[in-house]
Length: 244
Picture 1 (cartoon, rainbow, N blue to C red):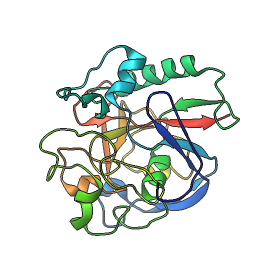
Picture 2 (cartoon, helix red, strand yellow):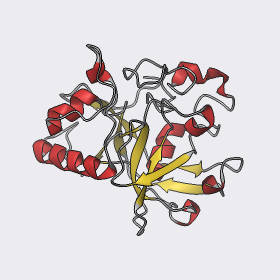
Picture 3 (tube, rainbow, N blue to C red):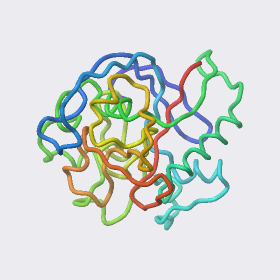
Picture 4 (cartoon, helix red, strand yellow):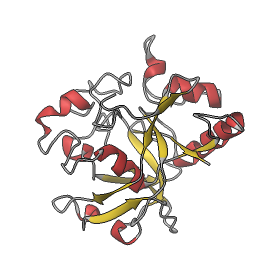
């Protein structure tokens, strides 16, 4: 990891890194209309976030099925799970919480959930203010993520690229990641703090771009949305553990 943040490991090969409270500027004045205007967001509660996306092996262990499109090869279990809807992710998290009930981590009990959209961008930026966590130009993107220009038209095993300053991997590309929030075109009205926007939209936010998107869609502030029942080989998830 790039700095010495507290973390814990789970029994499925995952690592979860502490994200401390703070403030940041969310959005991009030069981005798409849905990323504007940039606005200050307060993260008031600490949480632990997955170092990497949920893998096929992790999903299989909890759900007893692997819905992913990219399952070839002996290391396929280390690729991110995809072809999972937002609704599927809620079921995965519900089962994970049932299995994990009462388990202490670093002296605390807690619960699993999806990150809110503001938590996702805060974690992805990791204290930076640039378009990507590594800078404003995509010339270094190959060092940090899998995208249309280098993926070979598929997902790849997690953890092969460089981490952001807080130690998180596979944020720029690989699979876009579901967030808890309902989608709103003007999110500056709904994301002044870290709690997710509930709304009444049937669409849910996903972040980070994927193996088939161009570099612009992998920026920290880039936003995507899909129907919560939709499944695609470009969307997976990263989970958060909230101390109680």
